[in-house]
Amino acid sequence: MCPSQPVDTHENSACPDCPAARSGPCQWLESDLRDSMAAVSSYRFFNQGEAILPGGQVPAWVGTVLSGLVKITTIDEQGNEHVLQLLHPGAMIGDPFGSAAPFSYDAATDARLCLTPRNAMKEAFDRNRDAYAAHLRIAMRQQLEQHFAQLALRGRNSLQRVAYWISTQTPDSGSDRVLSVRILLSRRDLASLLEMTVETLSRNLHQLADRGLIRIVTPHRLEIVDAARLRLLARDQDARLKNTLLRHGWEWGARAVNLPRYIPRLAGRTGPPIGT
Image (cartoon, rainbow, N blue to C red; front, side, top):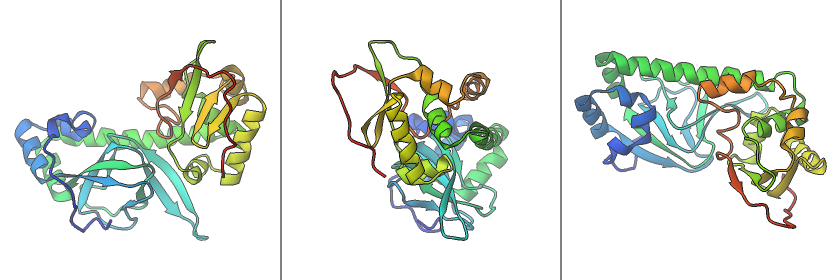
């Protein structure tokens, strides 16, 4: 969608219950200003893979992610897309002060956004210092998350990256429970996020399964079989990074999978090989 085109969606009739009102800058707006913002804002649903904001354009609106994941991407000289970062609910898309987006924003999963005209958002920030401070905190948090992601990948080979991506977001499970992880990203986006090819990602997942560390249930669901050995392979002995991420409200990989759920282990359960 070109950001200058009108948005085909309904108005925010449920603004008080909107996730952006709790996690975005809207929470700092005075009630009358929030009402006026809600009157000109709209929700829009984006299908997985759909363009949200093309790179190089000045947006006519500012978006707040309500649900799903949004990926920041760039295209190299060979035409290959690279995922630079994932944005989660509460993150903002587009500069309310009018600079062009240096990268592209696309729906990494089905995603829902609240879109507010850029001029209205800028006026709200000009009138309300707390809202502007919240905008700065959100922008700094998104930058910090990118730094943490780069730090998490540094010094690990491709197999260790996959193991680290799985292990650092999972709590310990009891002997009578199994930890199930559902992958929400496309295989191509996950491989790009972990800085490897799709073939390398698939090969590493199979290698982890062959070692008895995980079980591949479906192409989109994994089960943790041996969390201790998985952490050892991932070189995840130092908990300082993970604890730092948790303090800042961000878990490595949490954008790419659902929050872990404990489910009973099914006797004799096996899964098909993961596809490429």
